[in-house]
Length: 43
Image (cartoon, rainbow, N blue to C red; front, top):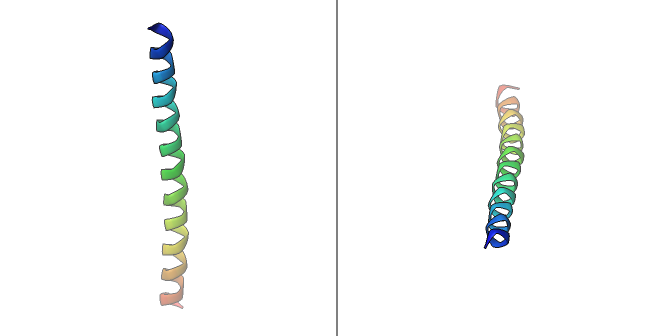
């Protein structure tokens, strides 16, 4: 019982960590695209 619970916690933690990393990466990517597009429009 305890073992399956810790496995579940690890799984949830891993999912959360992965999701956070993906979100950070995506937002960085979006920022770059937005900056590039804005620069093109301004130039």
